[in-house]
Image (cartoon, rainbow, N blue to C red; front, side, top):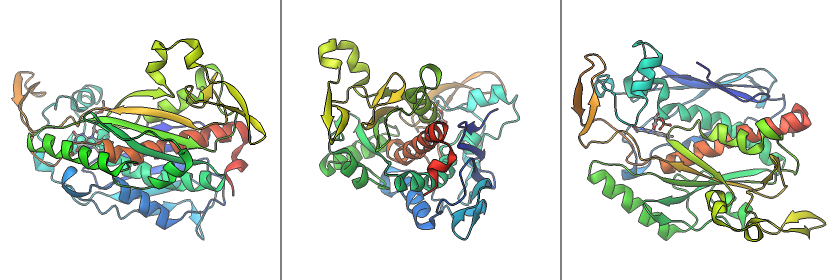
Length: 360
Ligand SMILES: Cc1cc2nc3c(=O)[nH]c(=O)nc-3n(C[C@H](O)[C@H](O)[C@H](O)COP(=O)(O)O)c2cc1C
């Protein structure tokens, strides 16, 4: 199985939800990138469960940087971050295939040898390592004036306002555990999550992510288009089931005259007046904000009764899960989407300009 993302800046994930550690190894970062521990802690805190709307599994994420740094900077060797799993309750898992989760597919692929506890290698728990490593890459990008942020566009039919003054908006949601631009909408979303939770059910939603400050001409035509690279990374986030750039699927119902983004001169350079293309044309960045949305499905593990098959007997049965689960993963996935987007963007930039580009 392949667990590595990227061609130039590569991140490899390892671990299982109830194993001793999870972690990430980042290859391809040049020496000299600051490794700011406060930045890593702040990013991890935004992903950690908060309050009544998240799982009660509470991991302190006391990470260790096992290699790749010297005197607070990357030193040109693989950067390895490991995080212990300290708050596990394996008795909650009996190997039943939870509908909507990866238990069945993992069982087939691993011929019954899989560690199914807490979803094993397929658990959202592993995203902590992505967020920690992504914080280092985000720091390198920010030093180049490239800012990435994600907010909750909608949950259960309640909508946040879209990004408008994008850089300020992106900075305003930075490392927020419930990133919204309209606090009132945020409260209504939390209520929807609480209602689903009290029904023993779950809800999904949509995340909107923006990359501000990326130069024009980054990406590749055809197969490694900027859309392909970013969506490849974003689809690796557990529970993401759809990605659209700019006006996305709504473009299909527009006329060309509505959909096209007119070119104008802005601040002495060529820019698009609107951004229906999501900052990408022909697979290459336009120099405008790269904007996309990711659909996040409702958390698979729910307490309601559902049909399933017992994987050991091969017989149909019913399951109603117990244990500790997120009634909604949308807000927790936001920091993960930001992190993997940072990896995809760093990878594209190194492909275009070489690894020196990332050194401050
Ligand atoms: C941060 C985060 C936390 C998650 N927590 C849970 C959880 O508590 N329970 C659960 O069933 N799924 C959870 N998920 C989603 C599952 O990991 C995911 O749906 C599953 O691995 C199947 O993958 P797929 O939905 O991408 O096909 C979480 C996802 C993320 C990103």
